[in-house]
Image (cartoon, rainbow, N blue to C red; front, side, top):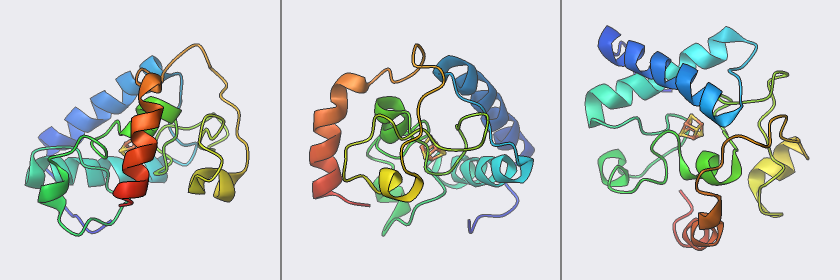
Length: 142
Ligand code: SF4
């Protein structure tokens, strides 16, 4: 993911965040611990270099400029609206990203097919922002 050696402080901060967000959102970390470790490391590196946990699994023309938006600050809009984590950090116990709530043309549905939410009573605090997110996704497809 391009960032190395984040501080222990940022690693611990992100580990704590991940544990608490799993609980809050009704998701689990990936069964392969290396997946989680890689994403946490990337997030922590962004905390060190940008001051924000910018999603480490995407390309940004300008990372610092991207931090002006909340779109890809973990937990990102796709997670908070659709409960979809394309980094595979917050997934089902089998390790699949939840795709059930995605718009029909979203890449996640095309890649993974339909993955049902095992805990539909939890998560998606920004679900009412789906329309705004769709407009942004078309305008700013980063
Ligand atoms: Fe966090 Fe979203 Fe990236 Fe998943 S896809 S790690 S929820 S920012």
